[in-house]
Length: 72
Image (cartoon, rainbow, N blue to C red; front, side, top):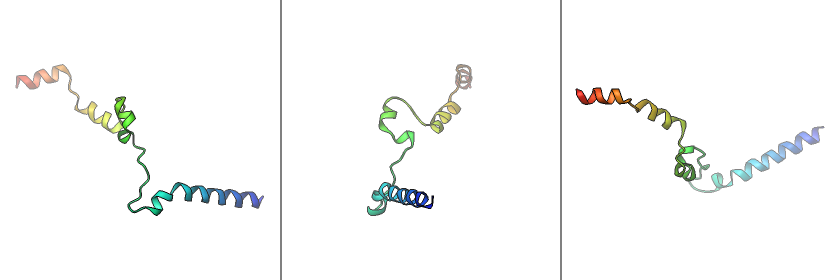
């Protein structure tokens, strides 16, 4: 039973090291951004992140609000 735990711990250590090779061995190495706004393919489809959608909704004004602002 302990052999399984040790083997799984070693396997997870190897996987973590392999996934972080670029980050560890390059100057200014960073993990790639997984943010929706930084993915070109999603931006091309018009898909944006929740925070930008929320900001757009908060900035949206109805027709009556726009007409009232124009009359002032």
